[in-house]
Amino acid sequence: MPTARRRLSTSLATVLILAGGAGLSWVGAEAAATYLEDRAARDVSQVLAAQGHDWAGVAADGLLVRLTGTAPSEVDRFRVVTQAATVVDAGRILDRMTVASVEAMTPPDFTIELLRSDQGISLIGLVPASTDRAAILRALRTEGGEVTDLLEAADHPAPEGWDDALRLGLQAVGMAGQSKVSITPGHVRVAALAADRADQGRLEAALRQAAAPTLNLDLQISAPRPVIAPFILRFAMDGNGARFDACAVDDEDARDRVAEAARAAGLAAVPDCVLGLGAPTEDWADAAVAGITAVASLGQGQVTLSDTDVALVVPPDVERARFDLVAGQLEGALPPAYRLEARLMEAEAAPVPVEFEATLAPAGSLSMRGRIADTQMRQAVDSFARSRFQVAQSGLQTDAQVPGGWTVRVIAGLEAMDALESGQVRVTPEMIALSGVSGDPHATDRAAALLSDRLGAGARYELAIGYDRRLDLALGLPDGEECVARLNLIMSESEIGFEPSRSSVAGDPGPTLARFARAMEECTKFQIEAGGHTDSQGSEGFNAELSRSRAQAIVSAMEETGIDTANMTVRGYGESRPIATNETDEGREANRRIEFRLLSPHPVRRDPLPAPVAVSGVTGEIVVPPPDGPPPAMA
Image 1: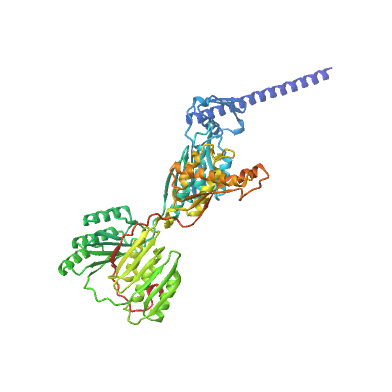
Image 2: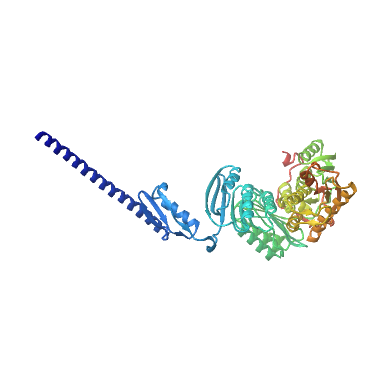
């Protein structure tokens, strides 16, 4: 019995010890869990308070953190969850927050900033929750590069104009390389860098064409400044007053200083000086102002700055003493790097009865006739012409009596024609006369600068180059085929229909006519046919008349809207030109259509182009003409 009693006491003690250990473990675990709960709730509360989210309630529930309260907006609710996840694991967060009623809230300012660089595209902003962000990212990834999505969403309906602005913004970022596109409801702002002036014009035209009529489009597209070589400024005064034959400056301040000096010399118009790169020194404006002031003090003459060479050419009726005084003052006023050559012209020598003439047709073919020194020089001129133009006829004759440097003058005249779309150059010992039409508004400046660079000082020239804006690639004007393509695209996307078997327009034609008006702004000069087509239901004669009447209804509606339709004609083709089967409803619907067709690729000119302003002058850079030999351009 004593042994059994001892065994019972030992077992009871063991049970008591195990029970005590379990109790202590439970107490310790309970204390640890309570500590973790309190710590998590306290840390989350501190983070939310630091971010200004005092409305959010935080409570610990075991290892979970419960967030409660009424968020002012969906964005604030999302931000609270995001901030809490920086303290505790996102899987431990229970979102029990509510959002204030959408009807009682002011809609947020939805906006997207699209930033495109060589590394990729970044999206920053706030969008409606209904926006298909996945579709946006898919569209941007087709442009190549990495796409970084930093957008946030708010549970508000998309405002009016948001979809059109988003669609145009995505198109814009795809068209422009280095760009920043800002999208807000009804407004798109595009800031981009174009490759050159022509690329700038094409990009602006494409974006305006793609923009919806109700969309506000703000374009801030710039092109890099051109590199000008040689850097030239030419100012002249004669019986017709003061003028610039060429004007290049390196910055805005230089342009203002040159304009002020020209106004003081008597120039009424604001000079059209080109901002460019390539100025030889930072003192370019000082040299230009000094040269203009010198010509103004003489009252006549011409000064040309070609890089650091300054040429002052004065007619023979200026007194020698006066000329020497002004030339000395100009030399002292020029910056150290500039070299002055001053020349008081003498009476003209008797003209040599020799000339060269070349004519460039609008189609691009060139014909030449005139005198050349010898067979070698004739081959040189012919080779140079064929390298630049399509030579259709060459009637050059050798003449050993031509003056020295004659081949150089001929080559310079041909090279100056490169600025023309069509025209003529006539070279004589006394004058180089260039006339024609160009799509470059600065063609006169280019031709004058080239002649000065090739011929040196003292060579007279006359320039009469007209500007045709339809030939200017920088304006991005559409040709006839593009105009017709635009009209057909608009018609295919329109909701204009016709009453059955009648020519009365059904539906609201207003939006389509507004698009027609924009598309026809630069297309009214082309001869375009509006052709009507029907399905095969009805008699052939009835369908022909019905199709013509429907096409006429469209053209008449365009005319009533204010579109110039003087060069548009109407024709009814009836059922003669189907584009689908007439055996199905879908095919018959496709055959009932209005199509536009270009009748001639050449625009109709009701009025002649404005007469070009004739410019005459004398090349300013003094260079001793070389003996007649291979010209510089052919060396």
